[in-house]
Structures are given as structure tokens and as C-alpha cells.
Image (cartoon, rainbow, N blue to C red; front, side, top):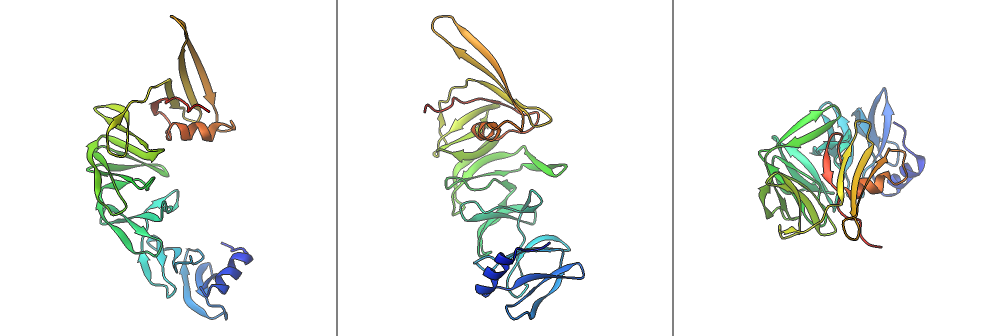
Length: 256
């Protein structure tokens, strides 16, 4: 695991230890080349401005301080530590999920069965749900979902069967077996559907759309977006994400 020299130089100038490799293990040296953390990690990242570095030890991913002490073990996603969203990342402790800040301090205690990252000041959380591993990925099913604010207060009750992140003031949830959109007060808002979308096993997105014209005129169209399509990412974002085999209604595209 080699580090770019410019990143190394920035770390040295900031006074942080820099990673080095010896005998297949990674440790850290100070600006003078003195070993300050003995090589014992499988992977070692640069220290952040807040004084934390992500490493992999015998138990998996962890954040350590400049003396090599364990600070916190993050939730692992995409084969790495959880990404910070709005300054917070998730961690798991005793089977429950909470949030910590960039300095490693716990901000919201681990008390939820699962949680999604923060978006627009709110995070979807669930209780009594289960995380099922499917290869390198995981699917969370069952339980009841609601939303918390950045202080960990439950601001939208646990009344949904599934929930997604907020985007432009709206979040998609399943209530009474149907996908609906809610605002930040948890109220269902009207949102028309212009068709349905699903993802095939190879990741191709299929849109089956319907348009109604004047009088009785109705038009149907089928659109396919393989991963190589330049519009693939924007379509996926518009749908709020999609998994192979999953089907969702398609909300109207905003007028431009």
C-alpha cells in the first residue's frame, strides 16, 4: 500500500505521523523518521486534520490516534470504513448502530438496529430490523423505520416498513405496503408516478413510462439504461437508488 509523496509531505508538515511498511505490516514514523507506532497493521491510512487514521488490525477496520490507541471501530461499508456524511459516520457496538464525529467522539449512542447516513439533517433509523449479508453487500429488512436529527432525537416516529434518505426535502418510505413520499414533518406528500422502474441482474435500469395526451391518447415506452449509458448515474439518483430485482415507481422529472 504505497502513499503519494505529496500526501506524505502534507502529513509531515502538519506534524502527524506518516505510515510506512516493514515486513508486510504497516506502522507510523514521525517527521524525523523515528518509529512512533510499530508496524502491526494490514493497512494504514494517513492521519486526518482531526488526528485520526483508519487502519486494519486483526479485528478489522478501526480508527487510531497518533499514539496508536484504538479510538473507535466504524461500521464497514464497501469494504472500508463508513463515509462521513454531514460530519458524522456510523459505528456498531454490541450489535447496535450509532454515530461519531471526525474526532472519533460518539455523538449519538449506538442504540438502533440499523441506520442510514445523514442527509439534509436527518437520518433514517430502524428497530427490530435485520441486516442480511448478500456477498459483499447487505440488505436490511423488517422492523420499523423513522428519522432522527443530529442530536439523536427521534423527530419522525418509527412507523414505516422501510425508509430512504431525504433529498430536496422529501424521503421515500413504505407505509401500508406502498411506497410514498414524506416531508420533514413525516407527512405524506402527493407525488405522481409516471411509470415503474426495475434493475436487472447485470445492473441495467429499465424504465416503463406512460404519458397521457389530450383526450383518450395514452403512450407507453420502455427505456433501458446499461451501466455504460452516460445518463445511468443521473437516472439512478432520480430513482433514489435501486437494487437488482427491486421495482419502484418513477417520480416525474422536474421541469427545467
